Length: 294
Ligand SMILES: [Zn+2]
Image 1: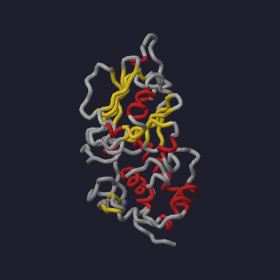
Image 2: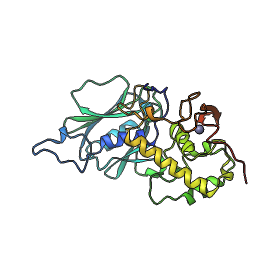
Image 3: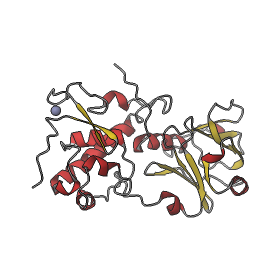
Image 4: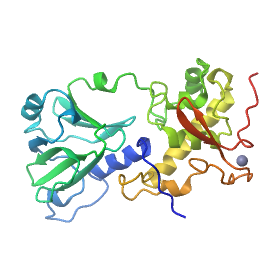
């Protein structure tokens, strides 16, 4: 049975999927004579104008300044940091946070605007970038200092330089539940409710385990679990969440997330759900038994 998720925040794989769709695939050969307009990415396109349909979407600066400064700028790259979409243009950078329901599309300017399109950038080649956001929690920033928008963000889990030892040091400082610590973006960037549950299951760690009870071996296993589920999510274009994130199907491969009462894929014990730090947590009580603090 195909699963359909209730509304929730996009996490690293969903944001990465959107970022990839906005990037010009460097390894793809384009047919001779094919115009930029026919290519999928936005890198290299020049902004001819902007439109704002919902004032609060633009968090920084004010609309007039944004419009003035963004016009004429060329998209240099499309990258991701944590759950932020980061688009450098000249000396400034355009950032998006999708929050609950944000989505970014590239399309020809003659395509009809969609309901809930909040911020639109028209490019000089006749295409546009549309930020659609039914729930209106998504935000865009135009900033010279990217760090001031990103704030205190922990390391990228897929950064090869990040070690289990470093995560052990970060998690071990706190007595809060590891499930809560995994959602703390200042400790590790990009992980949310789905991928934290899945990673804890792979690492066989009970979600209520206090951070300062984790062993170095468990921290190592947990980082490996986080990486595995993020890679799986990216490979499947993320999880499709309500009407957003077209095409992703990671929701059909969940081991524990939203599988309350269904048998564990390893031992058959029914999956349990518990609210931890106001977020629901799904786990196998047998595979993820809490062994206590040594
Ligand atoms: Zn189990």
